[in-house]
Length: 184
DNA sequence: TAAGTGATCTCT
DNA sequence: GAGATCACTTAA
Image 1: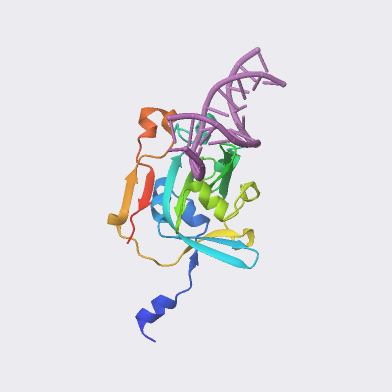
Image 2 (image 1 turned 90 degrees about the vertical axis):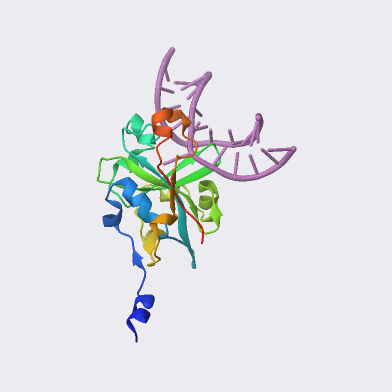
């Protein structure tokens, strides 16, 4: 077996707390091209992540946790590698993965993966709701991340302002904390 | 462009 | 308890 072939058959690597316990902007960028894996019954859905947004701690006025710890935002204050799932606009669930050290409330909103565009469509498609809130990203919880050794060129990553956060004021709403992966 | 929809948070 | 707000989607 050639070395090349060996590399191809390498088992996918699950992303652990170690991956997520870094600065949220770094993790957000690294998360592009990684796979979000959902297990529903016997069915497994694996989607490459194509769009994320970073929410960076107490100073970030767009981050829910900037207004202090509340029952809703509590998961963001925990260690990295857990989900923060919340309900918005009376209809939609939003999926975030918590990053950074414990007590530093930062998280990444998964906005798009695979052919699914839009954070609420993604959670609807993957049947994600409050039951996953504060859970760790593990196969036994039915939702986790994998590195499938897909190489992402830096030039394919685009940074832009986050969506729907004008309430955060000009400084924070204009931060280029949205990362998108260009197609092809 | 605006309505739908309900949890959450900030006032009383 | 009331009122405002909201990291969106869909139908016009």
